[in-house]
Amino acid sequence: MDDSAKPNATHNNRDNKKAGGTGVVIGGVVDTTKSERAMWLMKCPAIVSRSLQAPSADDPSRPVAKVVISIDPLSSNDDDSSPQFTMELAGTEPGIDLKSYSMDMSKNFVPMSVFSESSQGKICVEGKILNKFDMRPHSRNLENYGKLCRERTNKSMAKGRQIKVIDNDTGSHMRPMPLMLDSSLSDKKKPPAKASETKRTRRDRGEMEGIMFKLFERQSNWTLRQLIQETDQPEQFVKDILKDLCVYNNKGSNQGSYELKPEYKKSEEGQAH
Image (spheres, rainbow, N blue to C red):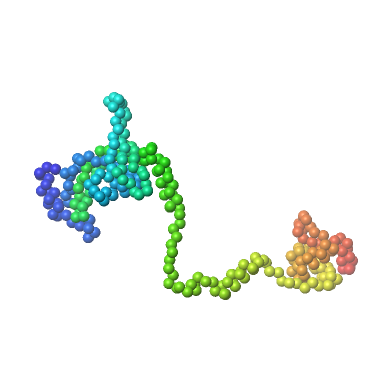
């Protein structure tokens, strides 16, 4: 930043305003003194992120990890083989023995810079991204990493149970009352609901046959349901009489209905004459 730009930046810093009282500052000075500092961008597992953010309690200045760069000395300058990067963690979480990770470097990525903001709202450019890495467990740690993933999956699937103290120590709301118990048992014993049928009293057979003849005088064909409704007699009793007096039509225009047998039709016609 040249000297001619500094007064304008200072003037803008004095005249900055807050938008709508939300605390967001419009304008201001961005510190770019570290803008050319080379930085690495790493996509790492959560376990690595926690280890890098937890310095040693005995010596806070102790390095949390080291990066090993492997170069093949026999490769020529024209060879496309790139150096191999490996990260070795100084320490891990208790019970987890995963310290070695391979770092796959991306050759093509969008140019990026790193920004920071202090609690006072000062914005700084911390550097620009020189290399971008994707981390994965080293080949010698694959078995332990697979075990860790299985344990994490099982833990996520387990249902957490809690013990809660109930204020009502008598437990009356948890113990079934007598009426509640009787009603639940009666509901279980109750058979499935069926279509209710009124109990019908059977007539004398001779009287019933006379009623049937009169009905067939009125119309020549009747269904079983119609006859039960007209006579108000039990279904099986009506079927027995129909078996003796009538024939059932399986086809034709009167399919599904009963009509008198031919011999009873003749007698009915003779009585009519």
